[in-house]
Length: 375
Image (cartoon, rainbow, N blue to C red; front, side):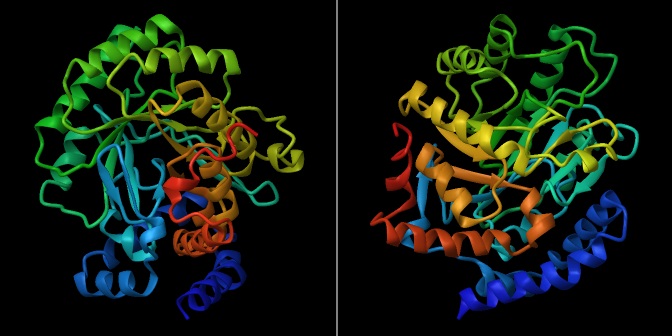
């Protein structure tokens, strides 16, 4: 019965609600949804009732990854709840975990509008927020009395400011953010280090070996109390990614997230009539899917289980999530599917995952990780 209800409500969103959203500005709709979610999550009774109705768990979906217990493997990626407005709502709509942010040390009001745009035929979003953030101190103050029933992490990046002129400046900025998070009472389950946002003021990067190593030396020297995952780019060559992976596994890093936004405006998955209407920015959703899959397989083969892989990019259905799991991802993150398929898409995906695992004879998500990586 739960499965039928989930898919019925999903159809209601896709057929009736999303067409109304399409009339209005993308970022205005996004902000409205977050404000409504923030109101809903203040009611513990409502959250409990929603969780009972919509959360999908079960033994086949449970796992322990990097010492963290997950009731299901579907998480909210950084970039949606960048001001930490809906953290308690996550399990109520089916998420097994979620990330806040990306949060930066300094406040940044975001790149000039438009910062979000819909490419409906391409199943993508134009993203150009540029680490819009109220600042680390503001976020930590807001969450100081929070607790959660699913793992919640914080994505940390460097402040998008021209005041950061060198990589050394950026490293110091990032280290300060981690120090503040570590000193806080906020019960984060994990950290993300976002080195791959393509919409920042240029001149600073952490992709070259010496710069990536310097960043990881500084961050891991903090002896962080929570596992850390590195958010990876998807626009690098296989050889460049292998070099990055070889460096990452030198350090006490729990895992990687593959990956971030698609920068190629000529990517074959994009409809060029939609791209022509887009200003500056990069693309989420379907344009990220194929390269994300390729890099998950590459990372799984290269690291041989030494680090955890979280798959992100173009996950809309249970089949999308399952494919990334079979290629080597232990956990899955998504954002764009929430806009196009509705807020209950994580619950829909989990329901479908259960069926796919049974079909292929797997007792758990963990037992399916990487089974297709060598094929």
